[in-house]
Amino acid sequence: MIQIAFRKAQTLYNWGRKIIFSHLLHAKTRSNFAKIYAFYGIISTFACCTLFKIESFIDLLIVIAFVVACYCIVFIYTLLREKYTNRHKLFDISPENAVYYIYGDILDPNIIDAKTKSIVIPVNRCYDTAVDNDIISENSLHGQCFKKLYESQKYTPDTLYEAITKSLKEKHVCNITLENKRGHLNLYPEGSIAEVHFDEKTVLFLLALSAFRGDSTQTTKEEYFLSLSRLFERISERSQGMPVLIPLIGAGLSKTKLGDKILFQFIQDFILAHKDVIHCDIYIVLRSNLKYLIP
View (cartoon, rainbow, N blue to C red):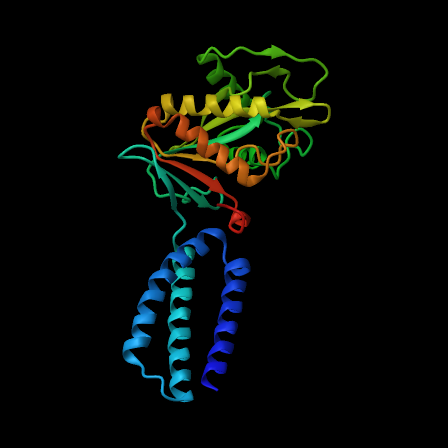
């Protein structure tokens, strides 16, 4: 009787554990939970063997209740830890600096605790500034960022473009002139970066990534890789020790045909390739809905 009850309890426990690990927790939480659970398994096994004598069915129920209670405590602790800890370290790039990933809105001024910071914003290679849901969608990061600049009354579309072209000229970035295109006609090389102040504490690195091909903006894999390489070269030159926030660059671009996990890994690989010349903390900022996919 006791053995049958124990086997049933173990089967129920394993089924519940599989459901929780596979569906209810995102990847990082599962990883943390597994580490804590491994330690708990040793402690609970020792405790069950030393504190309880299983001589009856009631004794068995007490042991099962003890194990389940400990399991629940670990589960709740892990959930609370994940909820209130948004910064997750990926790896160190120097004794002083590291790479992290966080979830949230990259334009939120309180997303990290820093006096000053730089934010990378991928834009099209013509640096269009009209957020009209035609040239620039207001749902894109490009559009959301520029809308905030206009709402702050720091810039208008025209004055923002003047600031962008001034920054590019200072870096001697050349352009070619297009014809029969909506918006601005000056096309800049992939990976060009214009620096614009978002506010007193934040500098924007506007990364030229996509170009109009037909009716949509697209980026090839070659252009994507070149843009990432030039981005981290600029970060090494201009970060000045300030933390740099990077979105999941390339997400939503049709020509790259790369999934979010792959893009996340590519960004890490490029950081590692340039780690000897990067002297700041880097935060890869992921959308909240990616908690169940990355890492």
